[in-house]
Length: 55
Image 1: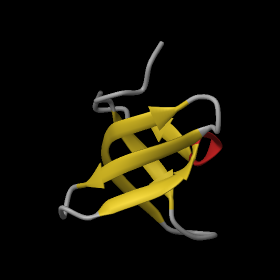
Image 2: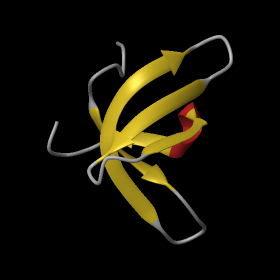
Image 3: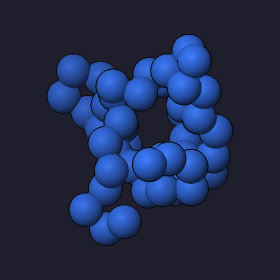
Image 4: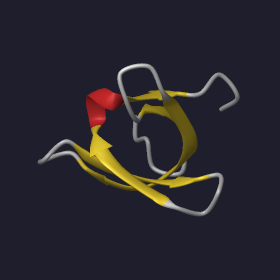
């Protein structure tokens, strides 16, 4: 299963999270790029994201 174009929640800090759509996935490096609802991009590791219940 690919995460591309899926809505995910991602961890931005120890107790803070964001939500957005995955626009890029690199499974070799385990990195993702997420377009946040506000229009900004977030980059992080696959283990920092989880599928949103809305998707």
